[in-house]
Length: 455
Image (cartoon, rainbow, N blue to C red; front, side, top):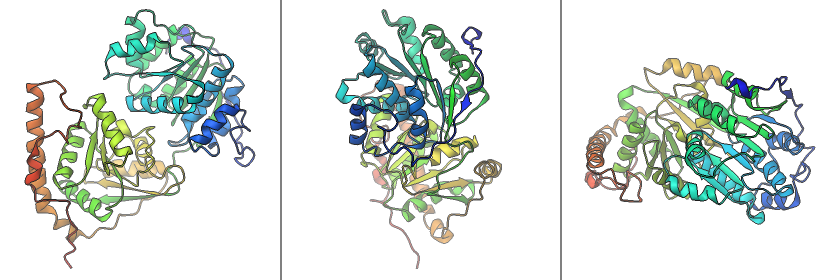
């Protein structure tokens, strides 16, 4: 990070763990009554561990490094102290929250507005993929909270007349490890140079990497470290399995699992945008209500996919790692790692989409002949050997013919869609890419696939 931003601060003070029984309500943590009521209306009955540790210190005006596993209530841990301070000293452009992905930015904005609805809090989401002019108009109204991805924020700081953050009181970097992994280091440097040094800074991260430590030295003054979980772990109520299968039969095994666990909602993680789209088309051809979410879709379509899945209008969401961090979708029953993650830590974030807030869930990781070493790394990281997910191989093989036919139609649709995109770059429909795609899927023998028991 920029040397000019360095503070000669000692290592962060580790905080002793606070027993959850000692403080049972948000009021006990020092949160003002009106915000306690908002928490109650959101169904936040009692604070999470990271909130118990971070909120009292944040209310005392300390800089904070929050290390906590995914799904631990981090947004509340920084949003409540900021809104509390905003009530004491009302001011426009009061806080900036930096996030790595657009979807996470919208989710944080929703939580700020839900918590601050009774006190008239206004927020603006500043991310790529959306018209710059409408964002400039939103910034001209001087919202209280700006939630942004670093690249688009820099665009506005450099090009939007009259917009600056010189009066900013709070800076939050959420999922800081991922912001830096996505090579936003230069942008973060620039942002640190144009915001006041006299501010409060909260840095939240799932992991403490060397880059995050460097960022901590550059951006925080005498921070307090609140670590809820120091080792990588997955939630106790998550049942984790693996399947060792030949690479060429991955699609067939996926269809088998979707049939076996029918009635559940699924998040299926693929490694590339193209494979996400292909697999979504394949499943739709077989009658499954599958919907894709990846970086090559327009922002409108990405949000559309997410909202349809959240509203349970679709039971299967196929995604790249754009959806593995931070997104809170309460009803995910099963996570399938269709393509094994290259980075072991991404496994933790992916499977963290299920078994949230005390619920149970399943995860199944596909391991082909090319993935053995990556899988061993994952087992080493989480400190446990995973059991095999039970399958009936004869039943799987009975699906081969139908799946092969669906693969052929999916390839045709992908090719036609690519040609259509070349002919016209304009976005004409509000449906997601697969729903707007060509109707050849109807040629695949009708309806949702029934299980073939072969008994």
